[in-house]
Amino acid sequence: MDLDRLRETESQSLLANIVAIRHRLFAMMDRCEEVTDTAGAQRVAGQLHRNLELTGKLLGDLNTGTTINNNILISPVYIEMRTELVRALRDHPDARQAVAQVLHGLESKFAEGAVIDHSYASGSAGS
Image (cartoon, rainbow, N blue to C red; front, side, top):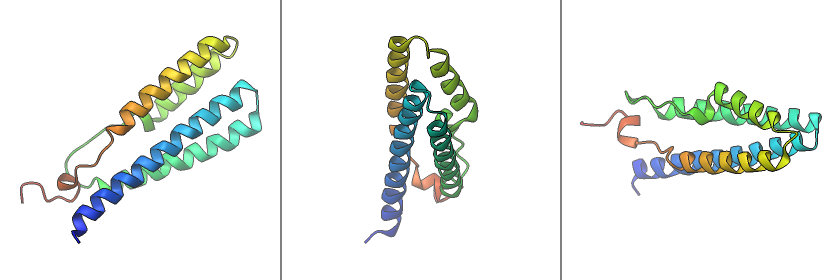
């Protein structure tokens, strides 16, 4: 069994699952805000924070080479912008739903591209 290939596959699978969970958490956050469930929104925000923290740790551990990737989906500025945008549309449910669908679609599309190039992450590129 090729250990390097296994690591690469598992890393990609782990990140894909974390991203999938994050998308569901964003959907839950949107739903909590729609029904003005402040306590629920706070719980989901905590889970989102932990998800983002784990993603950051994993990407930091896995991406030790010289390649630098900035993922806007885990940026605190993006999270705040997204939350405020959905909140601003609270009184416009149709627009809010349409915007939420677009955001979910774009986040899913760009999250699929979040793949780690093992040769750079392991420092073995060009060796």
